[in-house]
Length: 255
Image 1 (cartoon, rainbow, N blue to C red):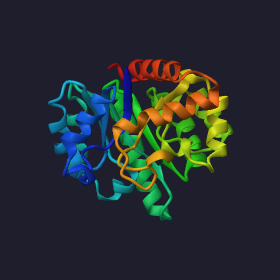
Image 2: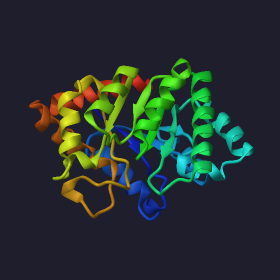
Image 3: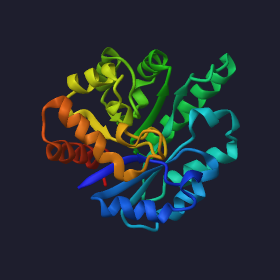
Image 4: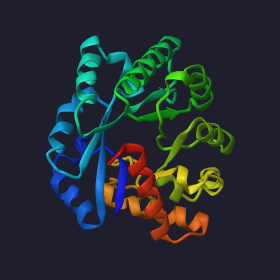
């Protein structure tokens, strides 16, 4: 069994062939798929995907969209999180990549607290987005350690030290297409030093296609390329990596 624990199949880039992409994933050995719906205008599209038995969902508000989120959006999010096929809250977190202003950072942190509290209330794991903000995220999560549910640091790209801190906090690390890139020595070191029981395989499709498909639209069926790279780094068989990371996902998300 193989699980893509982080896909954005609702994205507009799949509008012309969404069903074909999904079927190709299942035909290639993907057993289950977790759709990450973290933009308010995609929430209803994600609900449509749940008509398939082996698609699950996480609902959240991405930090880039936190400034647009209204009280009505948070109210709707609370309802969505209670859906029986919603297996996590996310992705949400901190994103300083585009030069976030001080006020924007405040808003992101307020949104982060709201969604941590929501996940705690409904006993859901969290999918944390962190981009160019790892040190701040560590400080923040230590401050709110009493309300942090279990979860994953999505598409991890930090340092070995930062990875150790997150793992010690109880988080798993999401490993995506960049692990296959030639200039990903730091991420390869993180994977080498992190116990396989703390890793999840993600595509983040349609973004971050593995090296074999770089420059093309990413899709769930490519998740096996990430498992292959992890296997090479850790001197394991691909089958072992798939078995363990799948079990990690089952235990974290309850699917």
